[in-house]
Amino acid sequence: MAKITKAWMIGLLAFILILTGCSSDTDGSVEGETENNEENGDTVTLEVGSWRTEDTAKYEKLFEAFNEKHPDIQLEFKPSKNTEYNTILNTALQSGEGPDIMQLRPYAAGAELADAGYLEPIEDLEGLDTFPDSSLMAAQGSDGTQYGVPLNMSTTQMFYNKKIFDELGLEEPQTYEEFIELNETFKSEGYTPLAMGTKEGWLMSLMHGIVGPAHYGANEFVEQIENGETDFVSDEYVASIEAMEQLKDYFPDNSEGLGMEDIRTLFFTEQAAMFPLGSWEIEVLKEMNPDLELDFFPMPSAVGKEPTITTWVDGSYAINANSEHKEEAKKFLEWMTTEEFGQMFTEEFSMVSAVPGVESDNQLVSDLAQAADEISTPYLILVHFAKGNPSSKAELETELQGMYLGEQTPEGVAEAVQKSAEGYYEPFQN
Image (cartoon, rainbow, N blue to C red; front, top):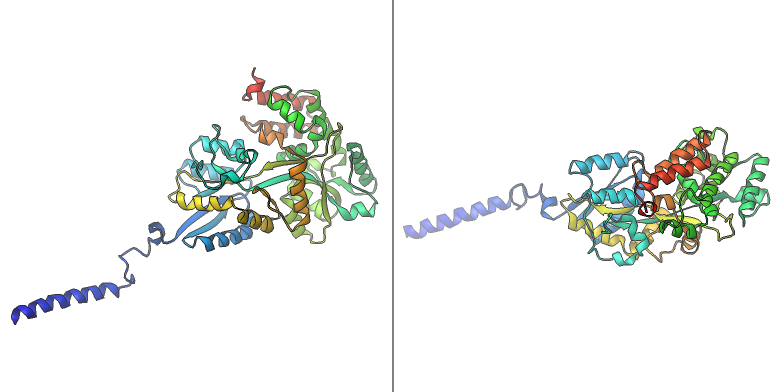
């Protein structure tokens, strides 16, 4: 009887200990498990880095849709100011830190991060074959390895105020001569013809990306310079710089002191008739002036060719090579390759998705997408000549600013860009 009682007491004590453990503050989990749920896989939080601070609310909607499919993965959008993003990102990556998923600057800038070992290769990512090679190349290393998924196609073209055009009985120009005549008309009628300033260098290369192809011959010239059959000191390219010099007559007064915010304001307040800028401005302009009657026209050729709009992949998303959650990050990048993502991105951002075949209910965005398919030319200096230190793109920007200050000639601008490109571009080194 004593043996039975002893055994019974031992069993009872064990049962009480089990009950005590189950009723603890950890709700049955091992001590510390609640705090470590994220690391143990119950919920993983991925930080997403970008330079698009203005898109925070839109990204939150995208992330909510992703989270419905993957409730174990939370995404936190943590953008930095556009002008500070590169420095902040590079500093973090050099310290072995940085966001799990990061937005890549396209082409050479992204390739530099890949070549430095900061990015995770995604050659085996499901859905990459959704994109054409021309889009994928925007997020590859120097050796052609894929590191990012393309996000959107940016376009640059001439936006215009339809109300002002209608008021003056004007139509979209079909030739470059008609484009110049438009500028003269707006100037004589008291409007600023072109909302453009030269204070910020990137605006210079951006505008040349619109105007330049009309003079150097667009895609034919691009193919020739890729093959080393022509160069930046050719007559055609110098003519494109001369056209930029001519257009200063139609810039606002004191354009040397005007930056992006200034020229945008001139346009949405309807003081300027035309605005040579990018597709990302559509939503911004509409927010600033919901009544703005906005439209665009492609740049007509000055050499008897088809009109063009300029296109490129403007940003991709890649995975930090030091992320502790690469597999979860890949799930998001895989979702980026789907038509569902492309459609939602287009609707929320009013931009042209990099996912082929996505349509938009926004007529302006839809028309831009169609033009991008039919009459596009690449942003030459960004897609093919953004290398060097400083880059050929930066050299073009600086020299154009000097030209507008009267300190440089069109021929001098072309020579400076050529000299820069000769430092790394093999076809120029033969």
